[in-house]
Image 1: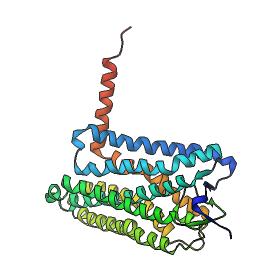
Image 2 (image 1 turned 90 degrees about the horizontal axis):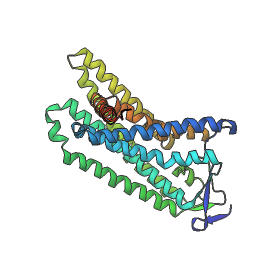
Image 3 (image 1 turned 30 degrees about the vertical axis):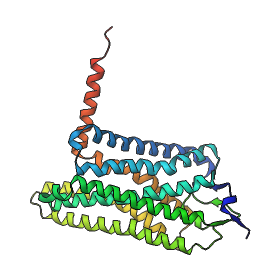
Image 4 (image 1 turned 90 degrees about the vertical axis):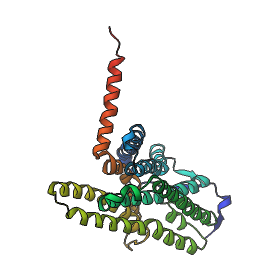
Length: 319
């Protein structure tokens, strides 16, 4: 097969979602609605935490960063996917494809670290409440977020630098709705063993180990909750933990299933649908699961809405 160096390549062709042409309009509307929900929901969380001084605590420090990361994560892939569905123009410049891969890896790994930090925060708050303010100090929270950014930036940079060294075959058609690293490596005519090794090592560090840490944290939280004397408190806490774990399992399960435990009978269409689960669905669910169901967040929202209502009535002109 003819080899073509990446430096001479101008673009990739993104095939997009595996839907029939007559279904495009329906799914375009659906995914546009989901994307707008993701952006508005997460921006609302950032706004509420920023405006309400009562929410300037470690408990809401991580959700605000998670909200920013979710907006960024969805914005890396979804707008381009929607544009492709609307215009039928499916090409993407080579530099744009590599950039998309970089930011996709960056925000996917950052999402993982922030969810893990939130699980640790909840573990300390519930299992060691007397030492919470000491353990989860502002300095520790800032260090956790800063460390997450540094590690994920380094991991994404390593992946993209190795990807940029690859030579691709004549077929530049990516059978996906974004520039997925694994899909791009399958188009390479070069040896990808080092890339695959890096995917495995980085995946263990940024996905598998955090997922296990979250499960352990929630296991300890569950054990502590069960020992609580209040039956009503147990039911409410278990409901909250259950909803958290369901979203966590959806996010990590899809990624681990795709990149670490791929089934031999898995079709490309199944892989794309699984990718939609953690790139579109979970960023949309996170603000509702982690923050907007919270009593303090609801109070901050009511306070904001009451201020807006009061202001509008105050300046309402008389006729």
